[in-house]
Structure formats: structure tokens, C-alpha cells
View (cartoon, rainbow, N blue to C red):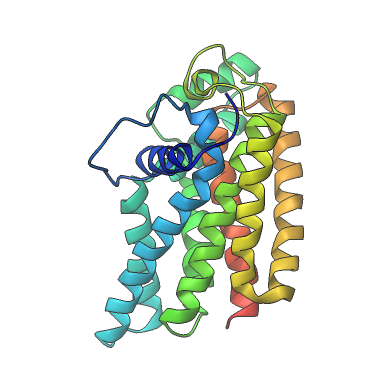
Length: 255
């Protein structure tokens, strides 16, 4: 299958992305037989939903008179609850596997282990600290929403291109079972993510786009050298790295 070709498929793909990438549930679970590879272009819409939830949490905390630090922490908590820490789990698994194993097979084995090691804990701690500190620099709910919109939509816009350009590292698992992402699907997702970056202003969008490109290229090379491809965990880690990159730019452009 390819990208969406009808309004019904567009709605099915957005619904599938919301259900897969967040804890949100829809009245219907019938998505017209669309696969995750078909619907991956719509991942930025899941990012939009997460951004709205995080921004609402910040707005409530702000209206109660909380300082920016605690409000930013509650915002992060809300976004993590919205996704079930799906991408944080991928980041910790990648850190443990890539730096805890010596061979490709051992790395993949560690990545499937539900236990978290020192590398994974350190990666999670750094991710939370950097994201919290960036959000803490922003003034007011409006800027928080713009930063979250850009970060969560653009980071998820990378998914299709990543799956298209890297082969699955395993013959089974989430990535292998997702299907093949077409060039058109990958481009649509990336374009939607790029449009979301305009929330940072033109200069911020250009800076964030360049930084995301560097993150994408560097992480792609790392995955190829470490495990020869991509898995569901690598996609989660890519989201975290992309979110961090955009929030850092937002802390400069919107503060």
C-alpha cells in the first residue's frame, strides 16, 4: 500500500497513528485495513495531540500560580502519560543495547530485555533534564504550546523517512511487521513535521530543520553501524532526540 489517496484513508491513518503512538482511544478500531507503514505519514498528528495535552497541563499549572520549573515538570509528565512513555522506553533500550553489548546479536538481545541498565537510566535522566530545562526557559502557555507543537510534530515527522531509508534490523518485531514505507508516505510525514516547525518563526524553523537533519543523519549512521538497521526502539529514540533538538531551538527563539 501507499500514502492516503482518499478522505476516508486520511481519517483512518490519523486514527491509527493516534491509537498507536498515544494512549488515546477512539470509538472505532477499524482503520480500513491500513498498516502502520501506510499511516506513518500521520504520526505528526499524534504529536499534535500530545502537544495539546502538555500545553493544557502547563496552562492549568500557570493559572494556579506555579513557577515555570514545576509547571514545566508537570507538562513533561502529561506528555509522558499521553504516550505511555513509549519513546522514552525506546531511548533507554537503545542506550543499554548500543553501549552495553559488544556484538550485534547481543545488542539486539539487550534491547529486548525489559530491565533498565545504567546507560538507559542515564539516557532517560539526561532526556528529562534537557527537555525540562528548555521548557523552563519559555514564558507563558502560548510559547509552551508553540514549542511543544513544533517538537512533538516534527520529531514524529521523521519516522517515515527513517523506516524508508533503513532496513529492519530483525526479521520479527514491531518494525519488521509494520510493512514497507513508500517514498511518498515518507515525504508527506516529513513535510508535515517541517510545517509544524514554523511555530518557531521562520528563523527558528530553519535552525530546527538543520539541527533535525544532523540528528537524523547521525543517528541513522549510528544505527547502521551498531545493528545494521532500525527497530521500534530506534524509532522511539529518534523521537526523543528530535524532540530535544527542537526544544533547544525553541528555548532560544521563544524565550
